Amino acid sequence: MDLMYFLRERTKFVAYMYKSVVPQFEEIKRKIDVGEEPYVDRRYGEEPDEPAFLDEYQDADLAADVIGMTCLSMLQATFQSFLREYVKEVGGGDLLGRVRSMKQGSWFADYRAFFESVLGIDWAASGVDIGFLEHIILTRNDYQHNMEIFSGYVYQTEHHANKYPKGAFRDARWPVSIFMPARLIVQPEKLEASIEAVDKLCEFLEDTRRKLRRSVLHQ
Image 1 (cartoon, one colour):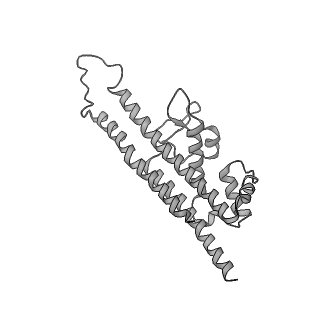
Image 2: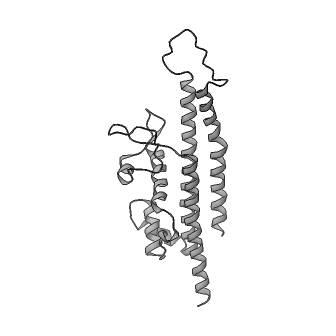
Image 3: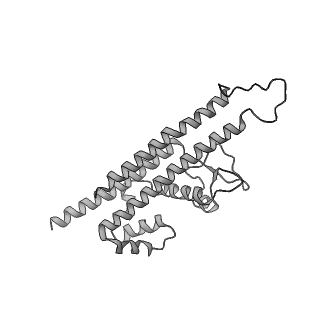
């Protein structure tokens, strides 16, 4: 099975969804910022308590965040599915049990340890920043498991911050203190870099598997 074909079909859709939807919300925010129709402040002769169209701006801002995080979640799910199918093609369902037996604390660490110790494949040899890949996983986890009723935004968990104080998806505009964790956002360049990193690692794994097959055939 051509796993790279299916991976790229999915990541192409992830990029398509982001580029098709997020700019619509960014355009709403831009119009509000400059007072362009239909967001013209006509509150004459009164002292406003808050900026005009604040609710509309916050809704657009949050919507862009949610789409970005959803795209990152889809990318992570695609990456995990690729690894699962890769292991199944190499050795069937029995090998998947050995992945879980790695007990490294996360599925990401389990797969990495499995590839190195069982298949003899070091992910670092791909040239991909493995730490950046883990940023993707941890940011997705924060989105899925750290949403609070008091805010729709996604914040970095203590576990994430302790491991990566300067997280790849932290919003540099957001003030951070002991009382205020970092806000996480998925900007277009970060999503593009994430897709490229996943693609590069998976292509390396497929190339390694093809080389191993050729080596066996010529023995």
